[in-house]
Length: 506
Image (cartoon, rainbow, N blue to C red):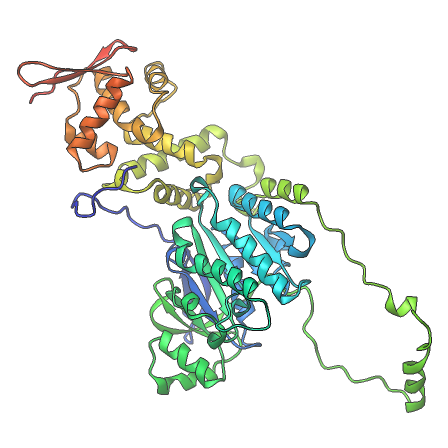
């Protein structure tokens, strides 16, 4: 719908829908949650030295929100590939595809709303930066109708958005930094919510870190990192010492999606784990020096020892076309079969009725027509998820048309009168549909023609001139004939239907 002049007092935002997930507890055992709906608009920065539990935190966040929102993970170490086992994520090995194939995959990720993990652990650092930059750029450049909400998690973000030049080429650094900056600065309007995690705040580009409004700060020891973390948390410098004393898996959280005041969070358990086990202490083998000397030097004169130097077996990678088909078939919402067996799932008629109820509720809210279509569609998707419905059954084009019908009060589109009206409205684009349906409904019921204020509300504008131009467009398109008598009373005729409204008193 149309966006009004910002000074119009009648433009009222619809109530925001909350979608909290629990990530852990505070020191008193009180649950601490992150509001995913708020996180989509305000982004998240996670810091923690190696061993602080940073990856565990990200895994908890991804597991808890897997059924709520699409997830895209840039994984430089391959730590999150195991999410595919329990939550249906598609694993994409960045080393196995060409540049064109990777771009196509990223476009299909947005089109089909598939949750994916881009694994880069088999690439060198510069290749990782180029691969991630290309993938994120394709996500960012998706067409407007595919701007669905998605969490984009970038682990080891200091690699992709370094504060200073390193050993990689300037071109690779520029491409990667540009993609990360777009994600954090401009991604919100495209539905992309950046979640960046880093071991060192001092190594992360400031223009990337500064765009986050939510923070989870784990254990760190360097003074410069503690000082920056304390500044972001709004703490005094002398309080920064407590960041050094945080236990593994304990973080200080702050932000509109977490808490308005800094709060200590002990991250809860996770269901999946890293596929490669962490190294543990193992004593060296017991052998005499002579035996070890013989083992180390045996066969060194051979050009190649097949038993020792055979290349490790690598599982075959799926072709890009096959992986794209998997994305298209991947479920968008992970449901527990025990909670809702397929045998007793809702019928299509019940699902359509539930969609109609959601659209009617949205259309009844003040100021709904003044909201951008992308915002309304995101609100619709969240409401569907809260009722365990798959919003993906309705795309953006279908949503805009059905929402216009809901605004006009069309409750039975397949009934004979409305079927004829919708057929007559076929040439109209979706953003021009609702006012015509309101006029047609008045003509069908023999009521007076809607006044300019009513048509402006339905059209989503505050300009009377825009309403007049809309009626002129309908008339030039041969959809209506406007008649104004000498008393100034307006009536509208719809020639194709043989219907006319009663005159509207001036």
